[in-house]
Image 1: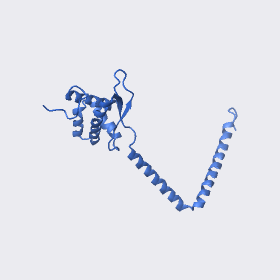
Image 2 (image 1 turned 120 degrees about the vertical axis):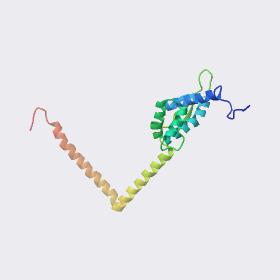
Image 3 (image 1 turned 45 degrees about the vertical axis):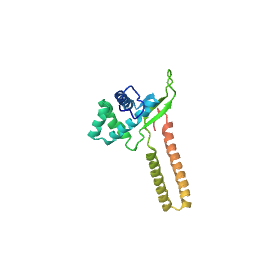
Image 4 (image 1 turned 135 degrees about the vertical axis):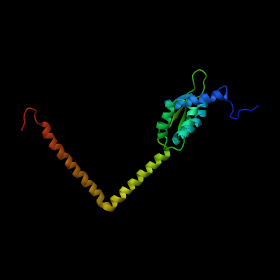
Length: 185
């Protein structure tokens, strides 16, 4: 008699476990966060990430493959349009499991499994690097235009000129505001 290779099942039979995981994946994509037991969350995570990878492919074959598991067309549409677009820059790690306090009643370890909505660390570091390069290029261009000693003085002169312009603009605006409403010049 064949023995299960993955250890004890989450439900009574393999078919029940597949259906339960399909329902949990549907709920995860619909609500983008679900609370469940820790073991169920750990079993759901690879399945959900695999489905998101199919959704990123976006082909008809990928859509049909996802439809075998998730039978709600509105959830599949959300997965392929909204969720796949948000996960485009990520190369994996689409879900996050956070442990929470045990369930009241049977003290089962609970967890929240949610879709990661923040930017990937790789994309964030790439953005920081691009910003640093741009700032360095701007600084190099500024140093070529003016010597370093004159650059500080030019900035001080510009700020003094700007302050004078602002005070002149405010002085012109105040007499107009202070005019009595009944009198006209």
